[in-house]
Image (cartoon, rainbow, N blue to C red; front, side, top):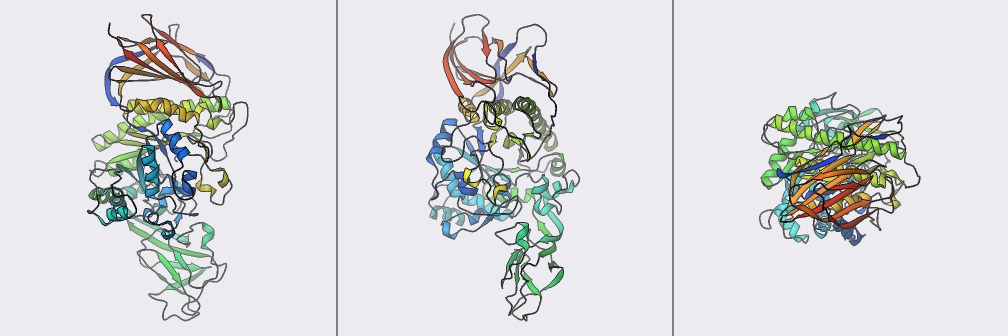
Length: 620
């Protein structure tokens, strides 16, 4: 996840609902479509492969049917795999075939060991049972364009046209999966996800704009005294020798330029082409420049690094391929896919310019909760953040269009309101804010903006919450924050209020968007800022018109006149109903019939609610 904006709130006075003038609030729905259509991909989720995909699968690798049912009920339309940060070092070809033959993985954050139990085929079994689609993230940090192209072939090529397609058939799925959306890496513009592009992860991308050029077109990077760890454990402590003979180590970011320097507790050891002729006291090693594999002696042919000694390597990493190389290789495997850049911000756009390889772009518009606040203060902070992020995504679209000289799809592959480390959670009447109605209102607000902006896919972070049995696990840095998921952890997979919002809005997929505006709408004002209480989205399919209204004020109902196209007076209404804005329980969807008899109908939208009114056109 990436911080796009940080807003610190330390003192918040009592908030008030303020109207501009004395006129009645009015919601106006136009009769003509805007040209946008609500994409089915908007109702997706970021999903991560570790720990049986956070309990999404049985120990035998079968999708949990409770999750499948919950996801179908919510209308989940797309899953991202193998996740975010963990995807950066995920090697797909180690996660196919019989489980006993699969290789190891390491976490993209701390480098901790992870298994390969949930590979592409298991993931697609879940996707297919849900009736969804998927987007996949290529490990830019550790892959080559050819490895990425092979993955595309494994997923999409017809049997008989590629050895990878034939292998997929051997693994039980002869039909191509047909994966359209692909991402090259996850958040390479974030310091700790620079990998081969930067020696010091604390350096901000703005301080080294050449990182964007490396991502776009490839390059090399000098590393000094980098921990020499193992292929299956890249944590810093893994650089310590255990004193065993024949140790095999891994340079983190191969390929390696000639003349690397391997140091054992301050002593420089010598690289040799083979250990066969080395004596027991010779401090030598072999290094495969292409793979980065380092081998030490066994005490007979070459010395053994002493137990407890620190192993480091200094080297030039590369040359590495860039985004454009990945695009060309992957599209050669399947010309119909879209291959998205994951480097966000102006430096990448300046580097890529109007290069025809620029195929699509990823955005992660998070609103971060950055300081201890009570629930009401957090709610106001998050609602203001939703407006800022909606405007940010619109600006991104405009800047991409201006730079590229053409329309480039913008894929929102992660979004949400999320805590940063140190965020204070609290227990009070209504429960934990992060699993309450308030973040669901945030999601509804974002989805309305994404629909109006023509976003092809949006994936809420995340699908399933952190499993309880992994709390405090040594690999817990790969788990992420708790209580930000659409469904609770296994085995319950209980729907959050956000899941209920998705259930209400996912039927809008495929509908054309109509213009809708709020006139004289109330604004909630506090010492931290202000935001409009009401957000709307109007859509139409055939003779059915749906007006969605989000009332984000945490405590006040809002009455509004409705100006609708002619003939829409009867239908059904559904409302996300909860006793409080921070309610976790007693949250549900209340439905009723709807009839407007007055020439100028009015409706009261309850505080902290989402309302959908589906009206049928009636002939005069």
